[in-house]
Length: 332
Image 1 (tube, rainbow, N blue to C red):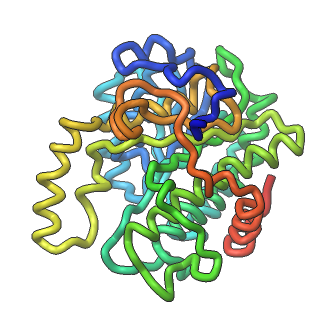
Image 2: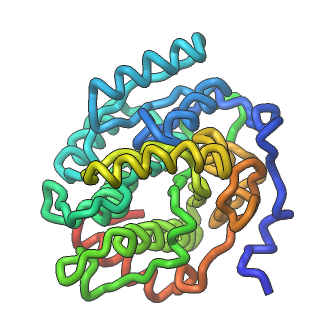
């Protein structure tokens, strides 16, 4: 029996060639995307802005964020977009941004937890002393989602969207979650740091937290929806930036275009996230990704395969509680 969630809908739901025709009118919706200045975050922001959403383009680097905003406005002249600067690797930065956002008193219709750090060769730490990947990919997004949750819940009654939709939290996972294991005794990889093993753990954690959030929202009777997606393998800056030696950098520069040619472009990789954020058909608790070979190749978007360990509800509840302890943030 397939691990795909057959109850959601047929596996094939969107096609690259005509995806824009299926995005509902997003006018009146405010959408925050972390890591939106590059990678799959940028085409996600561009296409949702093209569909009419007001996009908050999240970036930790102001200069790069401003450049991305300028590029987006040049590609979509009618775009409604603003820059949101904060660093997911700093809980103080996340708290400061969330406080300013809540003070505006505006609803947040969609939060897309997209930004990520992938497999730095050496163990690095966030400003709070967490292993960089776990601190950014998991804890930073957990804190941001929890702190902004009042604005997300407010979207139920305050949103001016032309096409009413429930507010959504979209977590971007990865096919790497299938190789992940949650090591509760060494979440920060202090005893042993293996770059891709640490990365896979964070992507498994993101998917488990998305499912756990869905269960908690349903138990609370909330209309907010938690949905996950993954990009497959796309030619983005995740493969080309980082602290690598000259040989590794050269190999990554060569492999990047090959990935783009054989597997997927950044837009291909963005489509599952766009689907999770905007498609009326996307289901709470759903997980979506490319439907090509081994879910690596972009193009068509549909229900993604979930590894058995991601379905462990007791481990997910334990992970949630651990994230609350580490961040000091409790929700929903």
